[in-house]
Image (cartoon, rainbow, N blue to C red; front, side, top):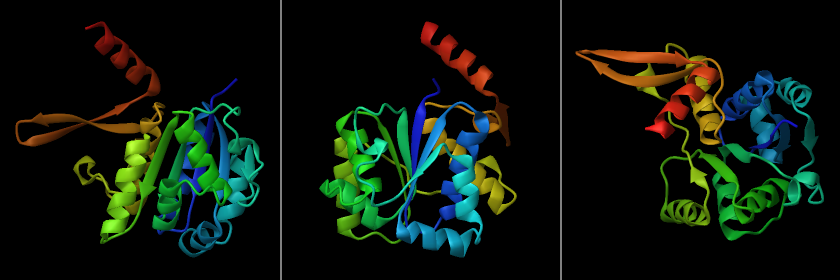
Amino acid sequence: MRPRVVVGISGASGAALGVRVVELLAGSGQSEVHLVVTPGGERTLGLEVGRDAQSRLSSLVVQRHAIDDVGASVASGSFRTLGMIVAPCSMRSLSSIAAGTGDNLLVRAAGVHLKERRRLILAVRESPLHLGHLRAMTTVSEYGAVVAPIAPTFYLGPKTIAEMIDQMAHRLVDLLGLTLDGRKEWLGTNGSSWVLGHMTATQTATTNANKSEQ
């Protein structure tokens, strides 16, 4: 059975990143994707990605769960998953996860991943940040989540916004422990030039195995 991955999309700007994460996971065939979208996320998808964004997403995933269905499979720790990515993660969703309210399915599923000690990746999006935001990030980090702010990897030399989104999405998937074909990585500097690599999942697995033997 393929590992299950839960993807949450909340109402912060950056909805295209959540779409790209789903596309990468579903397109790789390595995982079974379950999707949860908040009402704010639905609105942002329409504004930033297009009217057909939600139907496209629904066609890519194994199941899209209603935000108010707190009895869904992903709300239970007995439903085994590899992890969960929330991209983008709004400050409201972040604060609810930090408070452990479980007041909708996205927050409930995130809480399940924390209590089950599974990987929870929160791609937060806000600027500037006030002290409450920072404290919420500290709290979820202490609980075991990975706070991964939406930040373009300029050092990888993206030429378009689509390339920026793709690189950030690959990084989020990396944090789950999945490495997909087409991923760019930084290989250091060679004199005055930058060295970039495109590693396939097979190459990365071999590299990791070699490192573990050293």
